[in-house]
Image 1 (cartoon, rainbow, N blue to C red):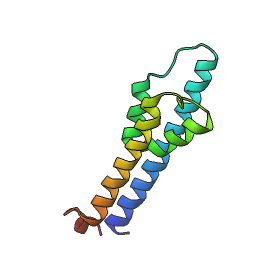
Image 2: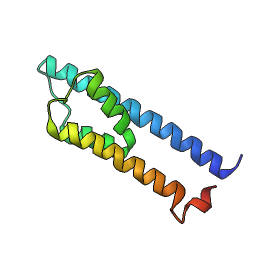
Image 3: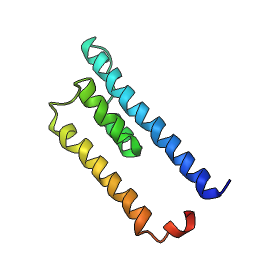
Image 4: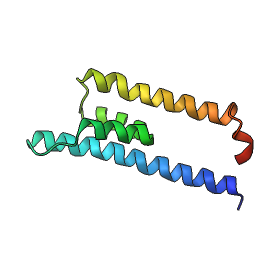
Length: 102
């Protein structure tokens, strides 16, 4: 198996797992809010999105109706996703590193 294939598989698994985590922690934090329990810090929610879990976090926000009234989340999460999409597109089509993994 080529190194590039292994890298693509590893990246796909990572993205899948981090997005499941993003979705899950949005649901957990919503449940904790309802139960007046210890909450997951907002910074942790954003860090999960920054680490690649922005899609899962966004889906979780709207699925669980959590943080949807917070402007920082309504603007921040989609902005993180757009930046990540832009970085992936740049890496795939414009980066000098593209030739190393193809």
